[in-house]
Structure formats: structure tokens, C-alpha cells
Length: 182
Image 1 (spheres, rainbow, N blue to C red):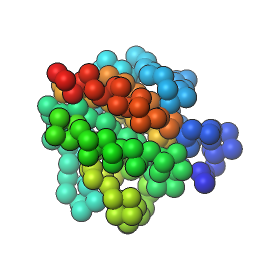
Image 2: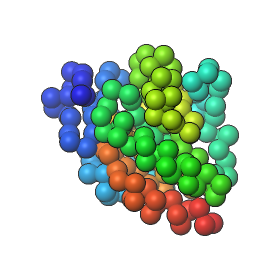
Image 3: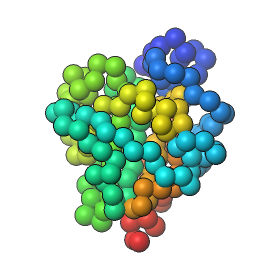
């Protein structure tokens, strides 16, 4: 179940309010089926902000490490049911499209970090990169109020889509297929 002080106000059937962290600005809301954007940081059409974050073993991974790949960046947490529900779809996408240039990257917002994410990743047979994100990361992407929040980047690192809330596998597939063919 989603938890936290803001849940009663912000929890929706398709996503969870963030625990802790800062409140975002703007009124971007999506039912997970529409692509959205605004003129702020992390907006569709802008270059994705660089980051350097630890993976589950403590190694630093940078967004630049994925240059030339189509990237699905998913802000999520282990305590969020809609986030957990998307993980098997990301596992399927990574397995199916890795050889065509797809990289799925999970950006965990779990306060306990790798201690809780590592066993989750093992249980769900996660085959993609999991990083431990922070408030600085969410701010650089325009603020992440609800999770899951997922960005799709083209091979040049430009944000081409942003989804807030649980999004169906077919929507992600329809979004990445044209990008993978370039």
C-alpha cells in the first residue's frame, strides 16, 4: 500500500505520492496513457539532465553511460504497488529490445536504498540497471511528485515522452519502437 503524509490527498489508483522529498510544481497529471510535458526541467523535448548515481553494488553510473541508446528512465519505489506492477513489463522490454539498443534504468526513491532494492530486484529477476536516486535527481527532472514517473529518451538523450502513473506495456512499446529503428 502507498504510505506517507501526502497519500490521502495525492494517491491515485494508477500511482503513489512520493514519501518525503519536495513537492513538485505545475499540474502535470496523466492517467498513464497520455504523454505529457511542460516548459520546465525534465520537459518533453528537452535534453535529459545528467546524473551520477550509485547502482545496487555502489558503482557510480552516469546517464552519459547510455549515450546512443534508447532509454526508459523510471522513477519508482519498492513500497509503491503501481511501481511494482510495472517492473515485470520493464523486464520483458529489456529482454526483448536490449539487442536493438534499449536500456531500461530504474531510479529508486527508496530511503533505505540498496538494502531494500537489491532483494526486490532479485525477487523480480530484474535484468536492467537499478540506481539509487535522490532529491537532487528528482529536482533536475522537474520534480517528481507521483510515482511511477517514467521518461523515454531517444538515442541523443532528448526526452521524447513522460508518463506519470502506471503505464501499460503496449504504450511503452509503441513509444520505443520508432526510436529503436533510427
